Amino acid sequence: MPMAADALEAELREAFPDAEIVIEDLAGDGDHYRARIKSPAFAGLPRVRQHQLVYAALKGKVGGQLHALALETSAPP
Amino acid sequence: MTRAAPVPSSSLKGPIRRKLSPVSDTAETDLTHDFIAKTIAEHPVVLFMKGVPDQPQCGFSAICVQILDHLGVDYVGVNVLQSDELRQGIKAFSDWPTIPQLYVKGEFVGGSDIVREMFQSGELKPLLVEKGVLA
Image 1: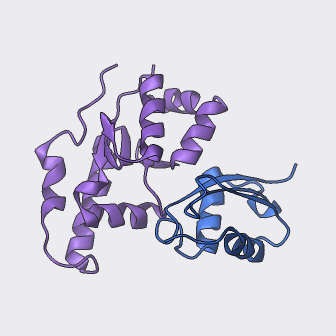
Image 2: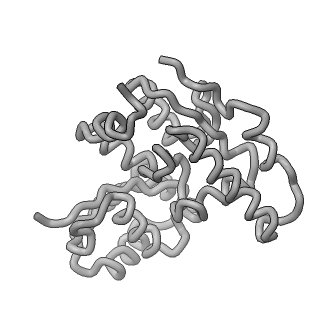
């Protein structure tokens, strides 16, 4: 079940208000996105924990409503 | 490279083939949980994936297979598509919503993005060496 890019971005912004967020629709089908998120919330966390924070923010949509969300997470230097 | 056969033994498959009841049933959930715990305890490198290493059924699983093959590490592929309990169970087990999932020495390393990122940045190989699963 696809999801609009701006809806995805809005949910991420709500969860990570101080983040730099870039969304790309990889396949043009609203179902395969890449999100680059740079947020202080990720500082000092291993990648698995960073991605888990994003998945938690999207409340179960990844793997369900969204087939795939490629993630690149980082903390500002 | 001597990659173990995908879903290597009938004993691996055994517990999860049984269709007892819906996923929410506690007995079935425990069975799946035990199967996963046993699999990652018995095999140093386990890739939970869609399809099998020789025939991945999803591009993200294929990426992980290519990377592991490229590094020449021995691993076991477990096809989550063989059982809905397993497919859901591994997500709950790892607190991770997507497949594939890579385990090394019983520890969750990540999904395809993390595995690819670690490979590209040169972190994956040292990790595998450090864990004693790659010479």
